Length: 634
Image (cartoon, rainbow, N blue to C red; front, side, top):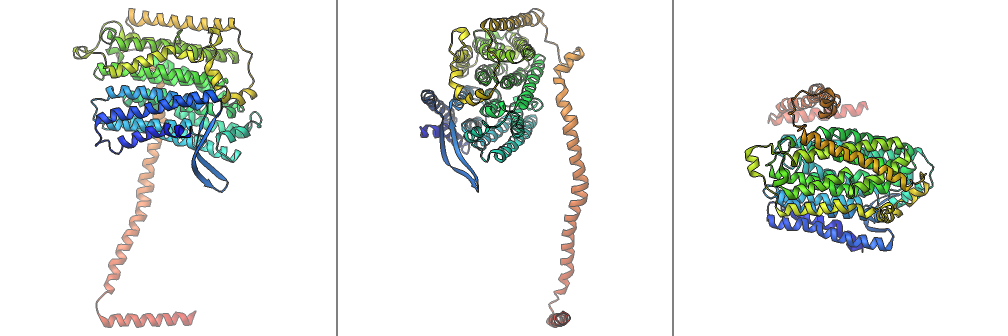
């Protein structure tokens, strides 16, 4: 079993080592087979590991070697295999493999084909380290690795200066969160004298609610989650990250990397349930992010930007679930979200591919006939994310909403409002893209075609997962046995023992809540059809006169401009002042002055070298006399 555990991250690493250093020498066909193949092998081993853990019902710790040992500090490089890490392994390798296959067709004509797959394999390796690590430092290696790969892939087309700026923005904003994570690790070691999960959690069980050290630790870790999972106020990097190729958006910025913050909180569940203040802050942040991003998505016109703000909103949903103790619900939604959001991004990539690079949905329309496979799979993903039964998103959202209502009905009402906005912007996207008449150019219309099989087969696979994914945790209300909840139960055993649980809702109450939510969602679907198909709204150019509130939201509340004015410009101004007055007028003058003094001294002293032997003897005798004189004085 240890060999299987080691091979899971090793295969993608081997793919990177072959495709990376030799990306110019290795033939494309080899990379097209090798890179997805390495991820497939990891997925197969992950399935074997999943069944082994399911049958044994015990966690496995695999230590590879002693990594850091300084005095009492002992950090092994080890992996923890339990139900939580097994679930993440299946998501990362399973969805990752499908996206790798899709990328073969999408990146076929790109000059950086081999380099792209080397980065993608490196990302999968880093993500596997993140979810398999048995301690916080190993998680942090993966955490930084996926951040590096995100930077490389966002700026993949590096000849475009705007794309490079987007990559730098993502990298810098993630470093802000990473600093919080790093400080949290320091405080964990100070408090527990260890960084291993099992040792930290076992000691935390005996600590009191609201312990100041635990509150500080969880807040710092949550800062890391805010950066990585794009929550307020560190969310603005994710929409700009859409500069990367569409498969990158699907794998990194929808299905896996951005969920790392959710995974980290779930992994540290006992620390969070003992820190009610942090849970409250996390809930408010998640709820604000869910509503804020959903409102922005309604008025966006870039197909990938809409999906980016949708991702931010859905991540907010997950944090709302975590804040009320719905850890299984958050992981359930993380899993289903990986299915339908990856499908949405890949479907968007298929559309962009057919439209010759066009991303403005106002210039699309009528693609249903030209791209039937893309349309039907996109429709399934849209229904799933909107939360319409029997598709996966309905069940995962319902679990979070039910737990939220039991905790606080006001939060539930706001979360439902977010669901209604989700249905609005997603069906607006669907209708404007695939219905009505085509609004693009004649050249684009002539170019319209369905994507090749290497791209549509992954769409069909993800569509099946998006449609049927809810079955993995079907509640008893629908005749299921909540299999995922039972599988993850050992991970949350300590948290459930110390957490105050609200009384479970009756079946009648659950049916009523589902009915209210579903009625609202269907109403939004019908309203969107009336507004965007029947009345042809939503097609105005950017410079058209609009009400102030619409203009405010369409411009993303001017948050980027606010950051630019409050943070970016003052920092640039301070940098200019430091450069002009401190660097140039002070430090440079000192350095240049020392250099000039050395040159002047050399030019002056060289005159002593006359070549006259008598002068040299005179200087030598003078030196001896001075030495004797100073010796007599001393």
